[in-house]
Length: 358
Image 1 (cartoon, rainbow, N blue to C red):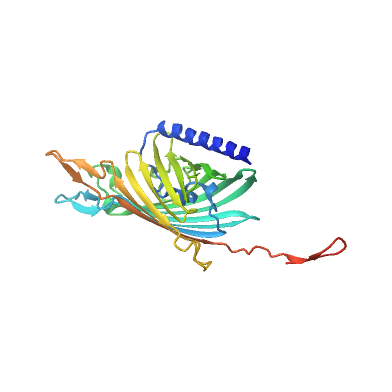
Image 2: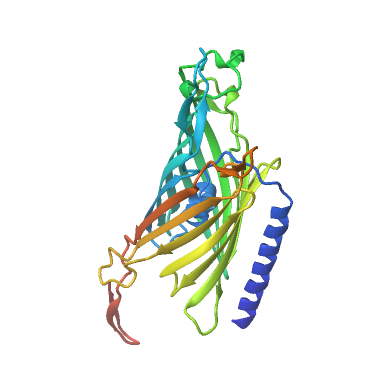
């Protein structure tokens, strides 16, 4: 047993080292997929192999995120005059539903609404994953079909000039597209560590409706990993996590450190999103020790991002700084429960006669 633990710890260190080397080799830039600060709870969105990684047979996860709260945008008036000032902070709402059965594998349905600038997006992902048991954990392979409906609100465009002819059909109009794409993911879960790799938007060019040539999604890759270290003689554990998104031209990554108490009864942590924000996270399972089994599966988390980029603060020519955004917040709720009862075996038996009932 000690030999297995030693090998697991060594593999975990290698994984974390490889993740760090990969992370520093990319430059941080914005990505197409929705950003979640509490990324470990949103892995089914980024990695189809992470479907049904909760301990429950059926689980539902809800996210609401408001990013760059207070950010304003000036919309120029094509006919001249004063520009309009509108709120442009990205907002999204997500629901993840996951079901797992040892006989059929894991099935996941994700629905995400995302508003960013003049775009309003609705994503629907339907995925399946299959878990392969191995001596030190399990390996999951997952596949998702991704339907994306995008709408461009011409009233919210803010170009430097309206002379661009490509804007003529979009001004004061709503233009929509619908794309179909596919995602693949692989996820490994060990005793006290995990790692995952996924590829998003594999097809890139499948347009079901609208002029999709201007709105093709770029292929993305995600890499995640984490290791939980239990502090000796305490009820606390520390879990560093690393999450990377990249299209090999640009990249974005989050470094997270969680402190968990009493087997994740409560947790808190810090997240550093390079060149973008520093965030704090708190969460709990408020009814984990409750006598009502229907309440035990409730989890809740909250995070707040403090921007470190120019989207948050800029320097004024006259001196001092100008506040563009007060940061952003994210609310997470998860509820899960088991729908299968463990078989109860009773009976009587001896060397000549065996009776068993379920």
